[in-house]
Image (cartoon, rainbow over all chains, first blue to last red; front, top):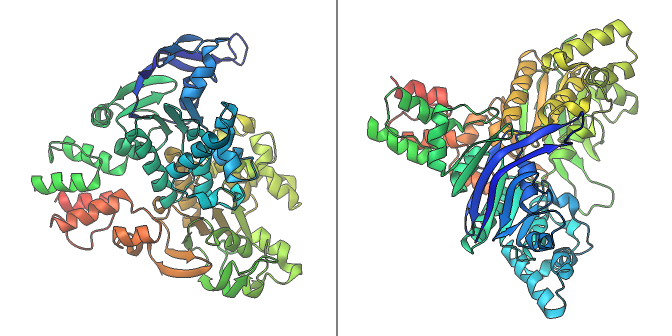
Length: 278
Length: 276
């Protein structure tokens, strides 16, 4: 059971003067329990890719397959795909519309046909996943802090029990605590067997939390591998618009000079390597 | 005319109408012309309210705010104060008004009623500084997010203020755009422009002269960026900040005895010590 993308390409406004190619030949696989980070500069195709993963955009060429079900236009299976893959847009708190936290979270499962006690338990469950207790149920979403609103928006996707969640820049604009809380939600979801696709600009964060990292450059896939393989690759290959973390870059430099033998992005690890070399 | 603007807060309190409690409570602060001040605070600490006090969008409910010696309570001075102190907001879409790059940059000086030769000169200067002169005829919609924020900054520069307030102006930018924007600010600051920045990201403040921590409407800490980065990781977390990885690397290397105490928390400082 996994989410598989194979040789996916996509062009906006195909056949028109404004035609813009967005994705070329992308392939990836996310298993349940994985955290796959998609990293790339603004305009590299990250969000276009995200919208393919739950069938908001139908592939023009190549395949997207969720637990064996292919994403195709006019397919009845599309509903199933959208149920299995929850998509959290950038700044999702801008889409909060309900009068209470409870209504907001219940919207998804209600539309999937849940009622009464079943619905309530889904709501409470999702609320717990984001670290809020039942006292929040009757509050207006607009009385919550920025970080809480972001988490609420995520709870309203989690409440439908998706097998995969795709999040577009979930930590953008959050303060340190907000970002930390959010990352620990993603990690605990992955720990419970949800497949997580995490779209981000923050390569340092991607190195820290991902099982695999997909790097995009102008719509093309540079690599898809473990954090270590990805870091090794970037030692030799420049990727447009990708800012390497200072610590990692410094470790490249020291290795280049023959001062140390291995690279690291974690500051404590690099300090150890340097201390060992001295 | 001197470029930088000096700002003074004396016992500034601000309470929104019908609010149970004041948002800013007795703030004292002197900002010298040409200084770069970073105000750090989490969501809800009063950062944005402080920004609005500094350019006379809000008037203190108690205490005084002086801009180049002018009291913002004096309604006759408000326009002059706002011409000296301009804000760049978080979202560039909030302050871009025209459809073409150069028209947007001209909007401010046009409103000041300047002669057209002067407007053209200012637009050229501001767009060049922001690295957008080549794109002056481009539609605003074709710009990237980072370019749009630089355009918002250029629009403010063209007014030729003495102080620019940055209200989380880099929070929507990707790392490459953030670093380009920081460089732009640094250059303007070196030219003498006063910068007051509010943010919750420690990686945006390393060039500041002074850092102030705003918590629940009061300043609870002040010092240099270096002094802030020297705080233990736990203490920073307590203040709701993430210690920059380079500062952690410095601390760990000091702990391991590789570099001496007092090494600066940046890569060039560390490099100099270990590659000797």
